[in-house]
Length: 267
Image (cartoon, rainbow, N blue to C red; front, side, top):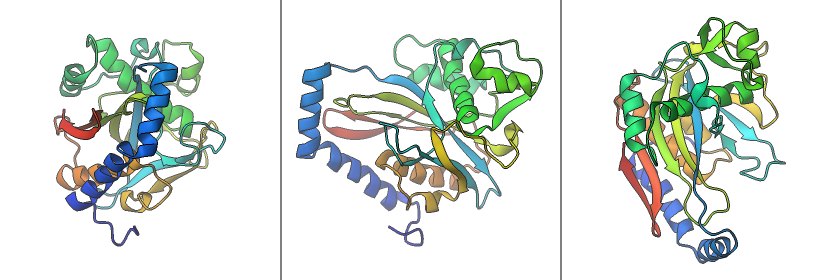
């Protein structure tokens, strides 16, 4: 598919969803799931956060994406949004401002296990941390960060405290059962105007993401993107068309596999 043929409409979304459904039900995938279950048993999804950072005009925005290092085992070479696993300390990191009440409430209503404000906050903090680590862009406000952990050294050195109030819940996706690595990934949106510090030259990646760039969503889908990323890109185009101001109560799609069916619900 070329970008001029891609419209980001319901037909495009159905095409990408059906592609994933076909993969899940393929003989190869079934065999792999059986082998993985026999070897590892049930693998509980690990919480992860991803940030979709927007820049440029509302009617023609760019998003921050990079290519995963080809030496990595998980999705090598794929064009992705910055993101990664939630750290056990993320929930206790001091912040300049908290998630909005609406965002926090929606996260807690949908989280697995016993929902807590700390757990919801950890998801937002992890997204900010991953952007910082993988791009060098620091989403924060001026202040003295009372945290000496190495992960937050750049914020502390630049006189910034991570900020959460501008984050908007965008979507959620859970890796299907039967995979050797599973993630319960929460996707957040934020404007680049929330960046309190940008490195000279634009980016300072840590090596996990390479060739960082600001790219139009419809152009990104024609690159080396994985199936779930393309689904999110279509969802993003539709969200921005209907909600360019990023309201904090806009419905968020939740994709997961139940049995052998790839399903979408709404948070």
